[in-house]
Image 1: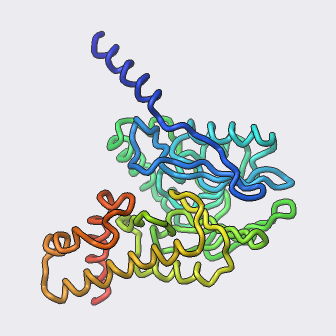
Image 2 (image 1 turned 90 degrees about the vertical axis):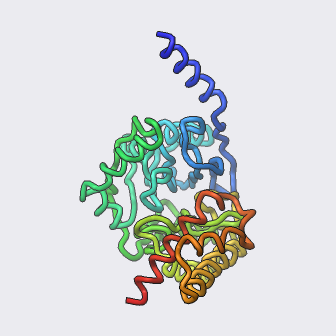
Image 3 (image 1 turned 180 degrees about the horizontal axis):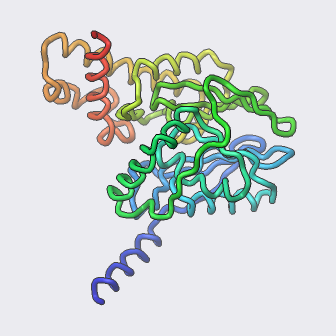
Length: 306
């Protein structure tokens, strides 16, 4: 009984300390909520990523669904305070928990879920359920309420979605951060939703099994050629095009330095030690992601030589 009471006290305190979800208007009819810069935890409720809502004449378009149905429901409640309108589509930029796991809310509201074809493949293979169980165990029941939702529409290369008089171009950028990345471009507004491809003063995560640092560089070069004024990413405040060069600079730096050290016959541990300090060491999430990125780049460079 004492243990149960202590657990209940812990949960109450954790919820009280959890980050508050605040909706803010970015531009025109585009709104966002900003997650904290951290790994998911019970304390932050998994609210460590951004989600976006675009109000059209026919209803809301949502980009990314947050980590749990509870968070996505809270996001919808915020949107409905702006205007009570149907959720028409929920676009998932890639399959990571903080972007996909809250999608059940949108399916229940009758929205069509859109994602990359490879996300659907991942779902249908059964691997997604295995990953959900592993993530839930790792993060101590954070995802207890998650029910995975398969996309109703998929993107292989590019599709154009017109909702009312608002146009959304949904474009595959995979493989990059994962093997199922998409971006969402609003050409009239010159707004680009980039998922986890672009950052400013924060390093990207390239440790996913389907990630490609080479592919990420290609994706970033493609984004640089687009006519974009506002970049809305998965973990930053709104950015401008300079953020693309920041992200590209980190990826190029890592590939060049790891390649040089490998040519000097340095082991992976020696490479990690040599690159412990870098021009990016003050960036957000450096301690969490940098070594995983080194490991992935080392693996990729070996594969590229074959």
